[in-house]
Amino acid sequence: MHHAIQSLPKVELHLHIEGSLEPELMFALAERNGVELPWNSVEEIRQAYQFTDLQSFLDVYYAGAAVLHTRQDFHDLTWAYLERARGDKVRHTEIFFDPQTHTERGIDFDTVISGILSALDQGQEQLGISSELILCFLRHLSAEDAMVTLEQALPWKDRVVAVGLDSSEKDHPPEKFTAVFDRAQAEGFLTVAHAGEEGPPDYIRQALDLLQVKRIDHGVRCIEDPELVARLAAEQIPLTVCPLSNIKLCVFDRLENHNLKTLLDAGLRVTINSDDPAYFGGYIGENFAATAQALSLTLDDIEQLARHAVNAAFIDEARKKDLMVELDHWRETAEFGCA
Ligand code: ADE
Ligand code: ZN
Image (cartoon, rainbow, N blue to C red; front, side, top):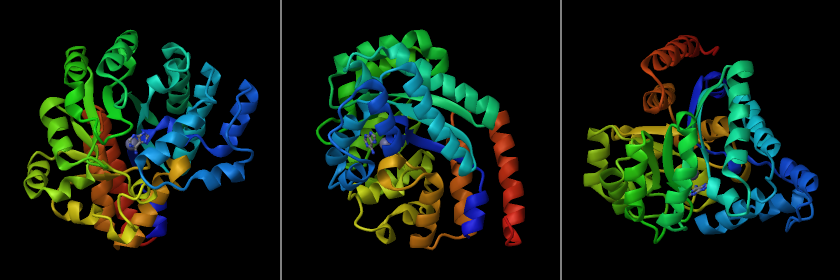
């Protein structure tokens, strides 16, 4: 199984680029930009990665992101992720970025997005990895702030496929952002939202009904509402599940108790993703491998998860078909135990 997972052509749909900032690069950028970090060494940073919930992680994640200043920094961050992705056989990736984390510190929106895009373009040319960019609004900030950020994104709208919603979920329901998402859709953006990670199933319903999301990021707490599970299955709403993240942030106590397999067997369009791999102990390949091991996933399950991600991606039918053909070849080889 290990080899079959390693060789699986993958599509990643839930990856925060700021969450791919490895401690080594964090230190290098801190030095380059003269930024003081609250940690003295790479080892000390890794020690700090003991989280009790989403907020305890976000506090560390925003502190780390403060080393990112220049266009080159955003390029280097994104390029480092793409090199990891190539190692994991990622063929297409859809990347979240949090502009407000940077504009709040005085960094220009254009500096952030142009650095990320230059690396994504290079990834397409040199690594053959196709990509899309998704702008996430920070839900702990106001809807007015989100609207300002949306306006900053308008000149870039041909390069941003969708808008999303992340950061502290509790007490920040999707409905707070209805007007912003209405405007984003009128401007041609698709929509997604983090919901049902720590927040209640009702936040998933709000994301679907008020924000018209095409995918739910996480969504694992849907299990508490059987009617909602039935709806997600009937409407084939993709869930971008991030198993190692869910363990690190104590959404589940152990991977063996994760509900991914239950949701998959209930007919939901479940996918596997890495979320913030530098903080949660693994990129997409490790998420697949650890989950397969803990939940005894079969080759059929792995194939299904990979095909779900292709179907859920914001790409045209021709690209989907190419990726499905790659999966056909993978399955033929995997069948004989030598993939
Ligand atoms: N920002 C980065 N990772 C996140 C997560 N798992 N949930 C909400 N916001 C995030
Ligand atoms: Zn996330």
